[in-house]
Length: 165
Length: 213
Image (tube, rainbow over all chains, first blue to last red; front, side):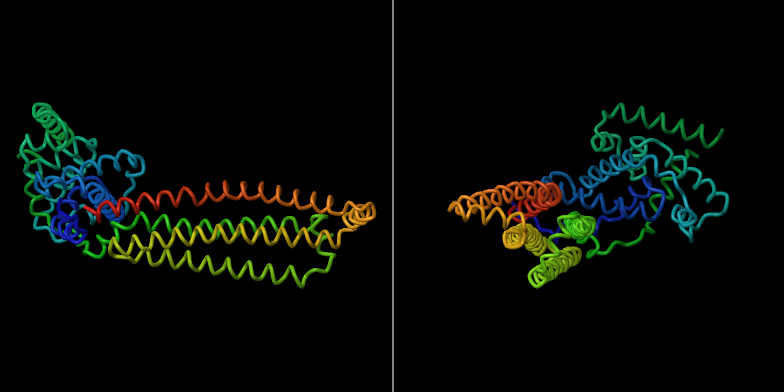
């Protein structure tokens, strides 16, 4: 069996860290929560690393562990995750984004609406945003492909209703 | 335009995240052990404060006052000072263990630190028990030589030629008391440190399994 190398693991997490950041972005509302979740996902990845057999790509495996961790943490801290502060507003929208005001506002509204979805819906949206196929989405979250499609349609309708009342 | 498609466009462009450097990632991996060791340090301070408060509360106790009147300060004070100095030394060790575990950046060094911390806690418990036995033994000796009631009993037994029975009883009661106190303290230490040490051991095993593979 290949020796599990801590340095190799850290290199891999470092290389794919944007993926973890993106999960954190959807599941948290402040920089502090973002960092906490990043740390928790890293710990869970490290704990699960001996079981990673390399059958799938490291990034694919990372999606699975990362999303599961985010869902677990989100469920635990659902009540307290509602608080916002001034700094968190700038955290949601990049400071030097290239959009005009109206687009900015629209994007912010979409982000808000996505963040208000439940944990599983958020995971589906996240994988969709990451350009994953329905097969990959269903495998990562543990749904059937049909179920993933049905849920996605419901999410789209939900967002449409919410954003265009 | 579909809301999610609009979001997707922005999402894939978004790469502005706070960069987490490798040394921070290493620290995340070792965070669990570090927080356990931090608790060992905090609990040892709480425990020390707890016993200090207890001894302060019994200061005005009748037995304590009588004991103070024996004028045995030349034995009691060095004993107390030794105890406090050693305890302080242990707190320093606990704090140093915590500090070095939080800054450890590889598994092997972390495993060594975990073993070191476990050892420190074990020595701490052993010291507390031995110190307690010594204090008890000295306390009994002082009572035997100074307590008027005990002196009366001693002379009665000596007169009747059964003094060895008296000392036998005293030794037996002392040993029984030591046994009860040992059990009490072992349960006490098991509850406050044993659980943390078990968690630390689990971490150690996880790290060892990873190292072996």
